[in-house]
Length: 500
Image (cartoon, rainbow, N blue to C red; front, side, top):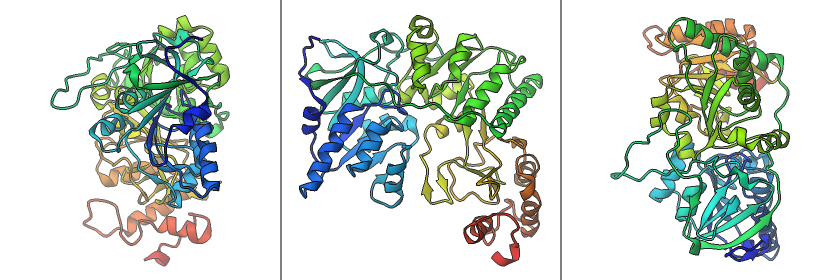
């Protein structure tokens, strides 16, 4: 291959990066994440550490990545700070013990924060592409994330040119970056399929110091098989949305959908796809999972705007093998646009995300176990929840074989306040919190979403709340169920008097 840029090995590229520098990597989930350079950088970090020299870099991405990026660098103890979202077990442990600084961010805000200088200097952008032109035109692969912004801001750029992704991906991206205030104007997206930008990223070719040739598939794995619990949650969501259409609160042509990542999200989309009363719909979301591909193929989903194709290897081959079909039905945008509050509000999106726990006031914890142990991060859920036409959160009613209740008196960490959360769904049922005062919300959550093992003791908590309170909250007893679990290994059979 003849290119007007130096061809480097991954090891040669890694040698250019210095201790203490900040790198903006491509990747939104494992889709489109840089792979070869971070692995080589991890090996270099190990060598430096063995020689008694410090070597750590700041890592910025679009969202979580794969084992070759977050995984390799974390195992080499080569990360000084990480933002905005992660999903790697080794990195999570390092964050929770304080060895890696992590700041959680709404994903739509990351590019803007980088432009404003709040994330520090971007020394390098390391970005995966499927094609590159002499003039600095870059065709990204299976995600956009914040790659366009990182490349524009970075002092220097390294391109991983990945032959595993066909150049025929050209035309599937819509690259647009808004101007900063006071020059910012509206973003003219009025339907999921509207294009407002360019199919390629264009950068100053002088900043491209080298190209690393690779041939590696994305490290996105298939999700677990559905379970009776996830299937029931999915059906509950579908039934609720059908009822909203019948009541006239959702228009007959339906509304665009946003769906988070994971097994519950897949189950919800599958149930919506099966429903004969829900018309063919569009998606305006941040991640496209396996479950959406057959919905596109059979016409149940008319169009999908997303930031990343987070597909299993088999499903990705299906897409690239029929690229002309999918190029007309899928659009990849930067996360600043896929998650933009202006567009979410304008399109009237129904947002569907998952929770770790929900308290009886309607506050949602989606990031921390027992209030202090980080799982992954807030991701884009806040971008959509606060601005959605209707925000839905779902989760199983219990965890750890029933020993933990997802419906609790007080959430140990709050990511989404009661002011933004409209609907809560578990396998037990649906709680519609709209137009209800705090005590009405508490009762509908207990009656419809809590597991039967916990309903009586949650009502006992309500009875203990002193009269005259607007919120059903006790400073003494709010975390008693969590404390009882830490003491006994089970949230059930609590004696409230022991915690007063």
